[in-house]
Length: 218
Image (cartoon, rainbow, N blue to C red; front, top):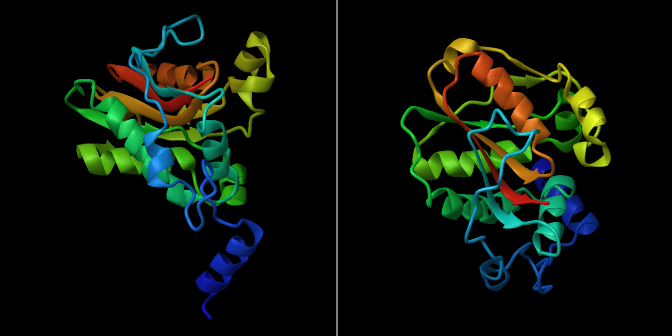
């Protein structure tokens, strides 16, 4: 038995795969339950003082009281990378409602290296890959670096959020974003501070229009 087979066997043993909606065996999300996930009619999220550097904030769904409250944590914390495909499809359906500007690149919100090592993947990057393939958009994963392993923003008040994100990100190659339009990709939007912080850095580096795109917002 190969190492990958042993790894998969152990994962299946520790985390049995059942549909998160109905319990059907051998799938994290069956087609019937996927079709029940409601994409919002109005996907634009109003801007506020925490999101001033974002030109658009687009959310596919509500997070609270939905199946996504099970799907997204399972995706991130139970190594269920297969869920990138249906979640990516949700983003594709949502983004298809908008006219994507020319010269647009996709940038997933980066993880700190420590968290990446623990998880083994960046969920935002997997989602961005689905979008990149569908829309034939350039995916850039080496432009924004996360320099601090921050606390989760949802646990903090506004002042603490701003302090938490201070000098958290940096642009590694401003030349690659100059005069470009950018769509930032993440799984869940809580306050918008993280996307806004990255957007501010990118605009100071010469980027033009910047959108934030997420699967769900709280």
